[in-house]
Image 1 (tube, rainbow, N blue to C red):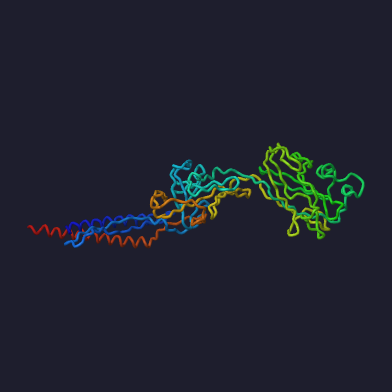
Image 2 (cartoon, rainbow, N blue to C red; image 1 turned 90 degrees about the vertical axis):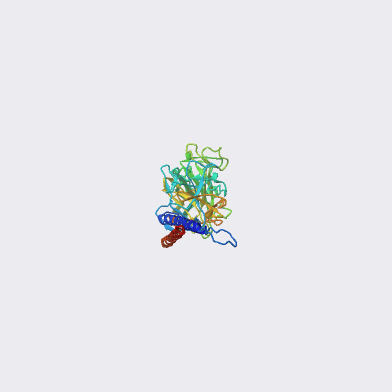
Amino acid sequence: MSLNSALIAGTTGLLANSSALAAISDNIANVNTTGYKRTTTTFEPMVEARSGAPSYSARGVSASARQLISEQGLPTASASSTDIAISGQGFFVVTENPSTGGATDTRLFTRAGSFRPDEDGYLRNAAGLYLQGWPVQPDGSVNANPTDLTALESINVGAIGGTAEATSRLTFNANLQSTTAVSAAALAAAGLGPGTAYDPATNNMASGAVTPDFSSSVQIFDSQGALRTINFSYLKSGTPNVWHAEIYVTPATDVVTGAGLTDGQIAVGDVAFTTDGVFNPTSASTTLPTTLSFGAFDAAAPGAGQVNWAGATGVGAQTITLDLGGANSAGGITQLDSPSTLLSSTVDGSVFGDLAGVDIDASGLVQARFNNGVVRPVFQLPIATFLNPDGLVTRSGGAYGISGDSGPFTLKQAGVGGAGSIDSNALEASTVDLATEFTGLITTQRAYSAASKIITTADEMLDELIRIKR
């Protein structure tokens, strides 16, 4: 019956436009929801395929809602360093329970990046979902796997303890006066005079048996952030432009030395200078090592020329690169006719420091910032990408789950392989445009009214048909 089908068509029009109104209402309600993706309604005719039929039967219309997940919202500035947004494709990996991490645990994907530490220190967004990342190993490497979710951990900034950083580089800038008189011990060592000759192993500067022409101390940091004192002592030799040098620790009991070293010595040798008074590290006369190595306190007994930290210190192994300058260096040691003096010394490393904050860079590297100036990477955020992100299944809290339409996920580093970059101190705004939604309200209301007219008109026609029998 054509009139009955008209009634059905009008009813489907009411239902379809009601669905469209619901989608528009959700969009308007979430205009300020972080990471929200607007929903659009698609209308499709319900056509009955008939050929040569004497009459036409209406089938009406159907409506299907689709969330435009792949649309990019505008990044907006935020005051929190743990607020993050993705510029480009991809999603953050989140979980509902921070303490789980097995293969069967549910992982969801979101672009709502308003993360804050919870009472246990886990980064959680406003929807209660916990951010996951690859942990950074002690050597700085990341065991990233593009498909293995079990390699991810919920990021806990509350579990990050304090840290100290051992000195790994030392720059020594000083001048040794070129007109310094050669001491009797140095002359005897060169066979140019009588007396007890200078000998770094038996008659040395570290023990005080020989008075250096110049000496200065520098403090370094060990692996626990404690200060240790090392001394640089120089004695002009009987060979022009060559000085004897000793580097030693005070107190000497801080180290255990192997054969060839004594009285806390960690390096001995000579330093040579050019005729212009510049340190010449390539000269055959320069024998002072440019690397200072300390074995751990519990290491095996040091061999010849080697040094360990003493057992009472309890500190780990450490290697320090010594920079004494050279022809192409602006600093270092020089031999000029000016009083011997320490111009400056620079060391890296730091004392113990507490966690001061957490920063996230554009590559997704989560870095712990300590109040002693140390910055240490702790996690790497992966970006999950999909072949068809619009095919993801919508979950509560602005999260999405995998479906057959979305295709499998791939975990990538931010900015690599099509994954978007990460904006810290930013949040992705909703993709809802109020002007578009209000226009949609008007057209949907008109369409709903028109569908209702179909029903009232068909009802009047049926009424006329019924009255024929009277």
